[in-house]
Length: 265
Length: 241
Image (cartoon, chains in turn yellow, blue):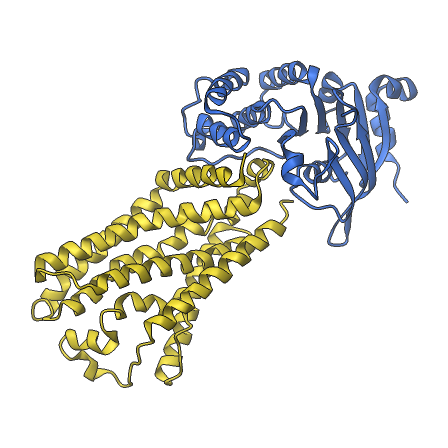
């Protein structure tokens, strides 16, 4: 039996696990709620919807972004859970490489998040079509960047899952790393005018800034950019994509390497 | 293979703690061998190294002549194992779990379907085959663990306290299943239940502090020490230098 066939089997059963878990449907619900909140609050708090379809598209990208962050909740226990819950005693005594198991788990997590991201973009597209009668072509770029961001977030989560004793610890560490540590450093670098394209939080912003950058986004909301005390420089999409690819590759390779060496005592 | 399990000078340190101290054992084919020893003697460590779950600090372990450290997938294809209390994915049913593990071992769909039914009946979980494992008690998981061990009909069974958590009826049923399966298999069975071991095994290895203290047939040990219990108590009592 080929290792590829085993990978297909692992991915299938891991995906079945995700489909059976409540967290998939919780994040799905949150994604829908996020989009609905934007669609309701923007006209209520502002003077109707923005004139620019690009600004509204950027605002609506909060849904797919949220779904991507949801990846952390799928992947946090992917590796750590096998050790913490001792299911590894059942799984690792089978004639299958740990590399295959990690790749299968990764693909299954990616598949589950992909469903949420696609749903998010379907809502974005339907909303924009209903309000403006068109969907900007940049939505495709945003979708592509969102897929890349999903991969990088999953890789970082898999890395923390491979070094953590417990699933909860891995999930919390990843959230703190992406949302707090990366966010704080990102803010400091932005305010001080330093390059920040290599920060994962900045990379996540590219899903929205692909519609015209921070300034265009603020302008679309009615000139709110004038209220900013410092100049916001939007990192290039190319550099953001490069950074996300690095997080994806390095995090993924490290998680495989660590899992292969980790002992189940 | 005349000796499907071979352990050569196995040494294992957990940081500075010496769990196995140059342990060597050879388990002959189609023999049921019990691995006896007090808590912390190194029984589980030995079985975990054989199952590729941990690495030895030095020495080697072979399954059917294949080094577990060098070719783990090849070596593991020959065994069925229960290590510690078996845990399974709570979102899957026993049928799905066995389907997953059977397919990973290359079993065909038709063969697997037939075999799943067979082993689920063998461990008396037929009314629970389609129920999610999250509802299972420890004893039921132990039964499922035994089912996954026998699923692919491996020539070698490695069992670590397999009757732990079973009720008295479960212990008797488990013994009958192992006795039945053990007729044409090699069984390496760690326990500190002397009665259980003497009913299932014809040979025992007694270890303590990671060292082999005695290895032979139960009859020989009973002859030398009057009973298996006396042998166990006498051998594991002496402090090691």
